[in-house]
Every structure is written in structure tokens, then in C-alpha cells.
Image 1: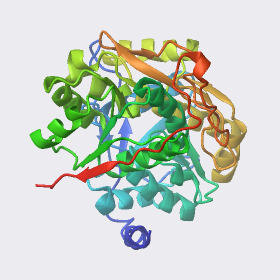
Image 2: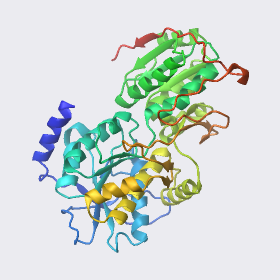
Image 3: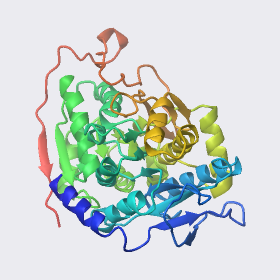
Length: 432
């Protein structure tokens, strides 16, 4: 936290240097072509300047491997809002700022959005670390930050009244996933493989906590550096227990790679994963190996979901995933709050809170007292390359604060009480 404060002070010292990009969208000239945006020199926002600026902390590129669909969804929301009249006739514009090293120039971009360009609110970042950085800025600048991507629950535990998270957080997701793992394991050993990046590590912490409450733990837990392959010795250890279930917790691309490695080595157990398995960036590289995986399904299908999917596919030529849906909701909620509260940061913040519950493309967004989405989470799977809800009973997480109900043995599934806590053999593989 001290490092973030130092970076914030440096950022505030340089807010007047380089311009954050203002991205003004023109529709693509051919169907299915993803826009790249026309970048113009930015000027400070002015209520009388004929435009309404919203900050966007993320890559302004439709081809970005991690966040391209998020940018497309944000631009789609802006286009639709402007087609509907903008704000009292004035167009909305996204002020985009990003660096592949958010700890460096990225935080300066957020500071410039807040202080130089005077954006009315900010949407971003694209993961836990970048969202924490943006939160440090908005807490001092006093403008709303609407988070579409970070599932780290500590984002909303800092008592920052300007912070809102559209996406359900790790603890809620873990409460849905753990009972499914227990049911499949049926009292036999299961294994876990995870990477040590910030978001994967925090998800593992929440998942192990819920499993422990139910008297369960993986027999083996292998921790890898992002991008690191499972070495033959580790695969041999994992296969030696003939696991009926394997849990893979990593980002979309690492999850796909590890899944292919497991299947190639002969592992035929059911594979469980984090929400990243619900991303297009997982499904496409995983190929046929993705069929049957089980993961937290972060969208609740509704008419709004289907309309968004249709609009997104027609505009960009590909299906959106859950991060695109949550980004679209974050921008549309921000626009609705500006229209409701007017050009005043405090009233926009208040309007955001009053908009809850919001029926969006991702499902219901219902703020708790800390500004997090308290919506329960169900499970999903992949069928013939398409993400879909998992059909079956008891696949919904309890609401935050509600205790998971143990499954009784007369349901034909493993009973959680009494249960024996297994001892985990934990391996952090040597890093290259």
C-alpha cells in the first residue's frame, strides 16, 4: 500500500505532462470489423464544451489479448448512448489511459483523467492490481470508479465510498464452486494446480477457505509461475492419485495451456476452474479439451444479455464473454448515473448507488453496503465450444454472509458432516 501512495504522489506531480488519449469513435466501414478508434489530442473537460468525458482505465485496442473485448464493449455502450441523444444533446467520449506497466505510467494516466481532463467518472481497470491503483486516485480525487473486472474482494473493503464493483467477487464464486468439487471428488483425493499471480492467488485463498470449512483439501497443490509448464515429475505425482477432480486456477490462457497438458498426459477427471474459463481467451486455445470443464458462470442470461450479445456480435464479428458484458454494464450504468445526477461528481456517485438493483447484460447488479455486487453465482460449463450454464440442482452460491448448506447423503452425494480434513502436499515448482 505504501508503494501505491508513493506512485500516486509521483503521478500527481506529472499530471500536466503527456496527454491521456481521448478516443472518439466512428463506426466501422465494414460489418464485423473491430474499431481501433480515432485518437485526438485531449483537452480539459468543460461543462460547456459540448462533450461529456468518462475515463477508461484499460487498453484502447480491440485486439488486446486480455482486454480487447472489454474495450469493444465500452465503445459499444458509448455509441449507443450517443445514438440515443448523449447527455442533453452533448456526446459522451471515453478518455482512455493505459500502460502495460500500470505501476509506472498507468497510475499517472488515471491521475490525469481525474485532475487534468476532469472526467466525471472512471471505468476500470482490467484486473485486481490495476483496479487497486485506480482506487487510490479516485479516493483522493473524489469521483466514482466503476469496476467491471476485478474480483478481489479487498477492492471494496477499503471504505471508499466512490468505489463500485459490477462483477461478483472471489468469496461468492468460491461458495458456488467448492460444493461441486466436493460432490465430484466423492471422498477421494483431488488435486489443485494454480499460478501465483495476484488474482489467481486470491481466488485460491477463498476457495481453500470454503473447502476447509467443509472438511476438504486437495491432496496435491502445485503452484506455478504464470506461463510455466507442469514438469513431468509434477504430472506423474498428480496422476498417481488418479484424481476424479482437478482444480486449475489461472488466467484464461494459462488455464487453457494447463488443461491441454493434463489431457495429453492422460488425466480424465473432471476439471474445475476459476471464472477465467468463461472467457473466449480460454475456450478458443483450449479447443475440444474445454468441453465439460466447470467454473463460476458470471452472467445470468436474460433478454438484456441476448440483446447485448446480438449487438456486440453484429458490431465486432465475434461473441462477447462475461468481462465484455460487465464492462458494457459498467459504462451504461455510469452513463445512466450522469443523466440522473447531472454534471456533478458527488451527485453521479449518489445516482450510481440509487440505480441498484440494475438489470444489465451480465445479470442483476445489486450493491451491498461496500459497493460490491452481492448477486449469487451459478456454475457454467463448455459444450461443443460454447459457454453455457451448468444444468443441475444446487449449483448456485449463497449470498454474501450466508453459510453454504451441506449436502445430505440421501441426495446421493457426499455428506459434508462429519468430514475429515485432508493434508495437502504443497509444491511450489522451481521457477526458471
